[in-house]
Length: 115
Image 1: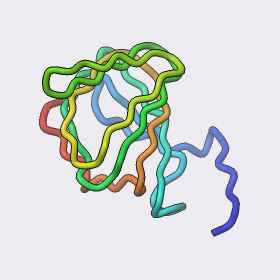
Image 2: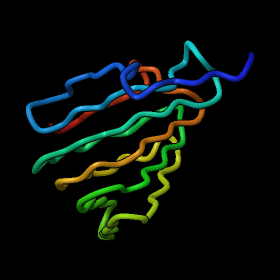
Image 3: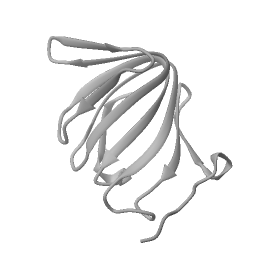
């Protein structure tokens, strides 16, 4: 693999729901080891887990709330939330965040149980 520059207009937008969109920049086609996207939510609420990838959210704007069991994690701009693979969690809020998956995101590995 060689160095690659991905311009902001080269992102591939995926509409997850009316309240959540993810724009993929670095995908499994570029690297099996890591993927990077920008996620944007407006009053979004979802319960999900990725069975294969660790996940990192770096919040750029707004507030991202992640809930697991009886714990609540509130992330604001500049904060990071790490979620280990195969961990079911609930997330909600209005935010813009960088979303990193390692190994790279594969849609079949995502299990959304409540949208």
